Image 1 (cartoon, one colour):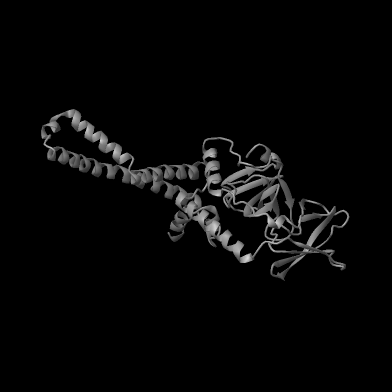
Image 2 (cartoon, helix red, strand yellow; image 1 turned 45 degrees about the vertical axis):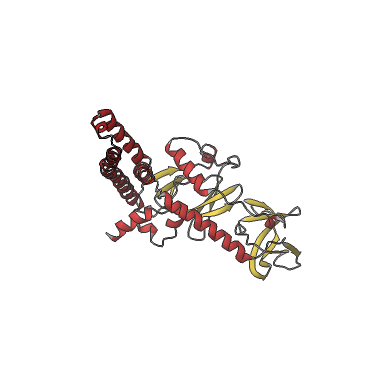
Length: 342
């Protein structure tokens, strides 16, 4: 029973909050979203109706008392006057801020219920998305201040058998891993290590020239002054809302300023907790722990999502589906699907 109620509570959270829960994979989020959406819609609708039934006679009574106070008691006999007071009370109730909020939660509850029931999409409640947006913005600002001022990188050639270049930077380059190829002054490099530095260059990266025959997957055109450019926060809340609404209406919604679509990059790996990495130019919002992905006649489950680099900023980690695990939703993946879906 505790797991059931935990699933209901977790289904209300935005994905970035929900994925941080250590026990999220043991919850039935679809059932929780169905129940929470249904309860949210029904309770909000009931509150609108009950409030109207209480508000209408009370408001009409108040207007009648004012008419009597002004000495126009005989006017209350007129059906037109009574109808007019009822109509005015109904309009006041409809446009009251509390009524508007309740109507919104009624619509939201129905939408969340239908999304979970028909597409198994888990959609949180809007107030918590606002909270997530505020926490994200506050966290970014605090992290930016903690890292100190932005200064250009220092590039230092090194004559060592282990690496050929050392880069001192004031900001971490989280997308630099063993799969990235760094291009600098016409030469390709691979990242071989990272160490802590001193202010203002708190991060030091060691690079060596790419070996002949090394497969180049993603190239980062490196510029020491790139770190001076502060990335503009994306309008994640608005974009998610528009994209979700577009999917509900069957529309093709593309983020403003998004680059043209290109095929996904699929990589097979033999180490770590996953065996397939799919890098995409477009987000796949329905890919969660309930999704089973079929690729080249093999079944995989989604175990994580990380931030990639342009032009593939969305990276999904998959592993082979364990034997006996139920298949809820099956997606036949094609690297070209991003050319068709925003």
